[in-house]
Image (cartoon, rainbow, N blue to C red):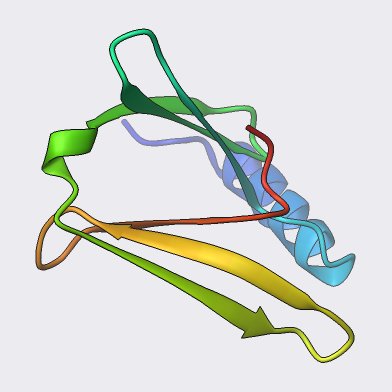
Length: 95
């Protein structure tokens, strides 16, 4: 059976509150491990954590660009691993 209605409502409220206060719904932390792979940790506002390992030899293309946020700029890097998958990191992320 699926998630109880009460839990769906709690998740909806947390998501709505986070968006209302301009808080991120997900946070990413990225670092290199001893085997020179990128370790990607994703945490959401529900307390769920996912980990993914991305070897450098799986990265096909890297784009670096500046995003205009009106009052400031943000330096970003996007790593493309296939035609449909990419990982974006930026200077405000931990790691």
